[in-house]
Image 1 (cartoon, rainbow, N blue to C red):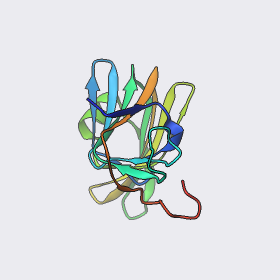
Image 2: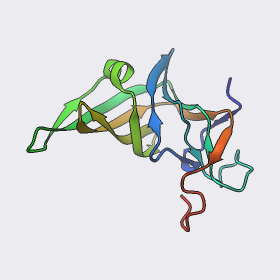
Image 3: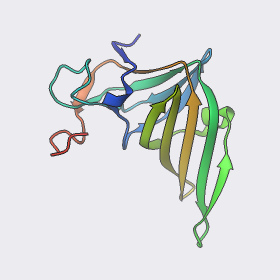
Image 4: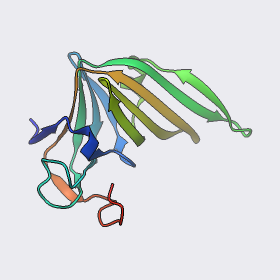
Length: 154
């Protein structure tokens, strides 16, 4: 189904990209990026010599299990933070339009920190998902990555 599939998470940039929805396929958790993400120029599947932005793409977390999910909400005029735990059902039903700030992979745990606006309030979402493997999937490149040409290329 995908032209490119890679587990090389260190040469993918999700920063400032939005995952639009979460899906399940058997035991796999999928984060869908309708507008794609960035593949760094040093990625072995990127032969363009530039960091590139992909067309629609997704992350497949093989045999994924949500270990921990939290939302930090800033509520009211005093902007006090309130932390709430979330479960997989919440992730599947309500997580859309989530802008990724950073992510990592360590000891088969995919970790993601992101932000979103909900009813005019800023929210920060943190996910820890255990998985047997992570695959970054895309079909094509649509443009240069937003950071291409910067002096410190991400």
